[in-house]
Amino acid sequence: METPTVPGEYEEWRPGPIPGRREAAESIRAAFADIPHPGGEPFAEWLRGKTWREIASVDRVEGDLLFLIAIDAPAFRYYLPAFLLASLEDSAGPPETDITETLIGFLAPGGNVSSESDFHERMDGLTPEQVEALCRYLEYQSAFQQDFNAHLKAWGDDDPLEDVARTALDRYWNDRRGARVG
Image 1 (spheres, rainbow, N blue to C red):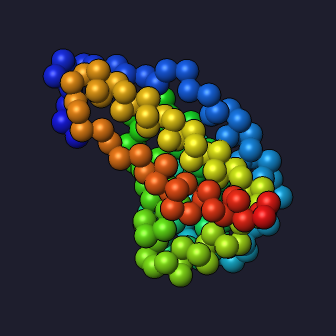
Image 2: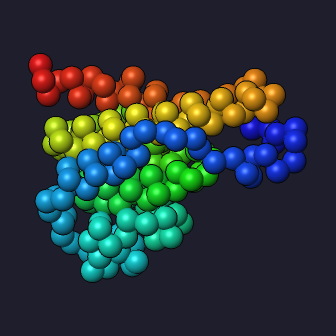
């Protein structure tokens, strides 16, 4: 993405009032409240003895997103809410921050997971409530992206950033959400 034509505008941008952030966070906390710890040794030393609730902040997860590639499906599902909440916390800045962009890549088929079967192994174990929480998260992030793209257009940038959250919803999550009521 090119920087705006007027210096400082990009750095000063903050999202408008985008509904759904608090609701998405509450939904994540409730849906994952009773998820059992996967057991075993943690993949990363900084996780030793920690629950997902204890690491759910930007400062704790920002540099360690790629460990999500290497962990198994139960551990991925266990630590996922920490990363979702950190991403929502990080939503005070541009939407392509490392946490949000990388995390959404894990939530889209063909994204940051090595294969389609790996993706399904990780996601098929989610409960209907967890799927709904993920959909709320992605809907919020999509609205956030649309707000940012509107600002880019106002700055004269006619090349909006891809709405990867909407793509993930359209390619997988909306069907998965609908499957639980069908």
